[in-house]
Structure formats: structure tokens, C-alpha cells
Amino acid sequence: MRFDVLTLFPEMFPGYMSQSLLNKAIEGQLVDVQVHNLRDWATDKHQKIDDRPFGGGPGMILMVEPVVNSVRAVQKMAQPKGKIVMMTPSGRRLDQKFVEELAVEPRLILLCGRYEGFDQRVTDILHPIEVSIGDYILNGGEVAAMVMIDSLVRMVPGVLGDEQSSWDDSFSRGNRMLEYPQYTRPREFEGLEVPEILLSGNHGEIERWRKAKSLENTRLRRSDLIEE
Ligand code: SAM
Image (cartoon, rainbow, N blue to C red):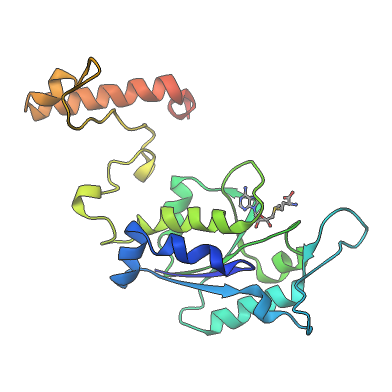
């Protein structure tokens, strides 16, 4: 799966990309992440990319021409052209179902906004998939793009080893249950013991206990999931 990230702050990405699963996926050529500086498509000598909003109001707006040009140029850099994704609080809220829908795409071009966001004509011309990572406002789309990449790479075959399979994850594959509690060594810490059943070796009983705990957790913390 290939990601092209269009941002005014490309320096935010190398640290994230050089760690853990994403780094391994990149090195193993399962995932490719290319980061591009929107400013490279500025049309004036000062590399201006934003301007004041027509009609007045606070802040600056990302200009339509450099943004549209950047997306068209990046699309031509590889095959397939890829789907365009705009990070915006007005978009469809990202959840595991949405992640699984997007995970079938071989290439995504992620547009990260800044300031007061994009000129409306970027949306009107490019018809991006608009994605929000939640009902709150970030300073920019970069962290939102990292959230998307992070959730999507888990879906790419081969990225997670067996021991880290996403099969059991809360919310995966239409699963409406939260995960059951997990424990590792030591068996006792500050008087708190690992539930006896997990040490029993009885896989059928362990499975039943986990299902019951999943249900209990979901009822307690996210009863909305059960109602849905
Ligand atoms: N004025 C915009 C509004 O009220 O919707 C907010 C702009 S925000 C300060 C700047 C950029 O951060 C946005 O263009 C978008 O790319 C990104 N952003 C902020 N919150 C986001 C969220 N919840 N999900 C995805 N992207 C977000």
C-alpha cells in the first residue's frame, strides 16, 4: 500500500516513519510512504501557499491552485493514480469499519490542512474522501494523517506477525465488543493476582471467560456498541 502525504510540515514524518511496525513495513516493502512539501507547488517567488479569506474573518486559507496542482503532480508520480483523502474535521469520522473500507485501496494521497483549512474549491475540483479523526480541532492534518496510516498499515497483509494479529482487536471485522483483560508475568503484583482460569490450561474455559469479560467490559464502558 502506498501513501503520499501532502503537507506544509514534512519534517514531522521521518521520526514517526522510522519506528516500530511502520518502519518494518517500509523496509519490507509492504508499505511505501512518500512525503511531499505543498510549498513546492507555490506559484509565487515567496512560496506563498495561503491567503486571507474572502468575506473577512480570522486566519488564513490554503489556496486552491497550489493544492490542486500538487495533487495532480503527485498522482502522476506513480501508478495507480490513487484515491485522494482530505484530512478535515468536516469529514466522515474514522472508525474501524471505515479503516477496513480504505484498506483495500492500493494508494492513498493524504492532504493535510493547516491554518483555517482549504479553499472550498479544492473539494469541489478534486472530490476527495473527507476524513475526520474525531470531533475536535487539531492544529493541522499531519497527526490525523499519521493516525490514518497507523490504523491502515495494520490491515496490510504481512505487516503484523501472527503474534500481533489484528483478528482479535476491538472493533475489527464488525466486532462490536471491546477486548477482554490481558495479563502477563508476574502472576501477582501488589496483591493483585492473575485470574486463576488463565493459568488453568483449559482452552475452552479460557475462551468462555474471555467472551464473558468482553461482554462485561463493553456493557460497562461502551453500552452504545451493544445497542447499535
Ligand atoms: N477551521 C477549520 C474548522 O473549523 O473546521 C479547522 C482547521 S484546523 C485548525 C487545520 C487543519 O487541521 C484542517 O484543515 C485539517 O486538515 C486538520 N484537522 C483539524 N482537526 C481535524 C480532525 N478532527 N480530523 C482531521 N483533520 C483535522
